[in-house]
Image (tube, rainbow, N blue to C red; front, side):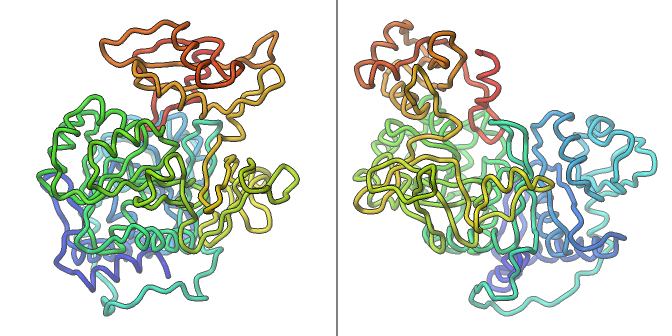
Length: 518
């Protein structure tokens, strides 16, 4: 099964249902399939072998979804590009994956000379509107004109049961997602059709998604979590409601109400903003069925506030990685309060276990690295066999996340191996200190990392954002931590900030933060 089969199935089963809404524009499943097939027909005519890369530099939009399925249907590999990245970063990605075609919004045309350089292999750019820019031998086309001049090929098949057949080769590359680079240089995560389809169907299964469901999409599609929202709702025949204006949370909440969405999905910072700087808790959101949270650990204190505000809604805490396509585990809402702080159990079809540094299983209650196996595990990193060998062993993914497992088999993240601070001979998990800080009623957000220290080797440093109108001193915050943690885990220094730098996905940019405060 291929990614385009998900769209074809829903177009046959729900032809007149709306697949995507963005502002005052909507498109049905049938029309989405037609437009994608027309564009795929054009792409197949290009002088490029199957498996060649095509990059997309569109913000979330109907054009993005049409292009995404057209590229995969045509047999090419899609490379979603971060629309918030600097041109120099995009240049590195383009140089690495060498796409022959670029879908690019006209609003990014001023970036193109830097992104492409003087020796780009790019042959054509397809834009959302006419782009008057001199790119030498690179041809430019308008997306809508290409779609209008092509004929749709193929017939919609009758709805069928989704099955992953033996024909779905794990080596059939579908997409390359470049990591955000928050912990180092960006790497291209290679995901096959099987990786993405299997994880999509697993997510649809445990979330119990149906054609009646709709989700507000505030996460960018180039981010694997946003990509998952698009694929799961295409697969179930549901609707994606795109709103790129989370900078104005009240506008997004208005969209949720007017569009009567049944789901909201976000990363921890989205929930922190909504709970502290919006009218979320004052709204009934009568049509909303569930919240999902992933993209990093959310402090239990934030989860408690969400439960208190919406006791009747399903709240799904999830864990994953880009390398896992992306979902690895979920916590059933009915066990949320009982297992507060847990990332839950493995998603259907995926196996999780804990191992020590020697690769041996760890006893219940002990800390070990999460090792993942299943059809969702990535193929590897593009052009990077060295880093691939470090995280893929016998087909299993070494996640780099440290966790414990309780007597019921539920996992609890302790921290990232790369975010373990070695201070004075002790190991301190940044996550544990961050969760402790967020128990302080004065603190809105916090990030913790290690900085060089002449005496300790590394010292624990915290950067905190206080609630509006709240005051707290460095010593008061340190004393708060010492009351709840071992003394060596309390931050040696605390810096106050108006805000924490974030990637467009909403994750805290720890690499930038650490460099600013090293």
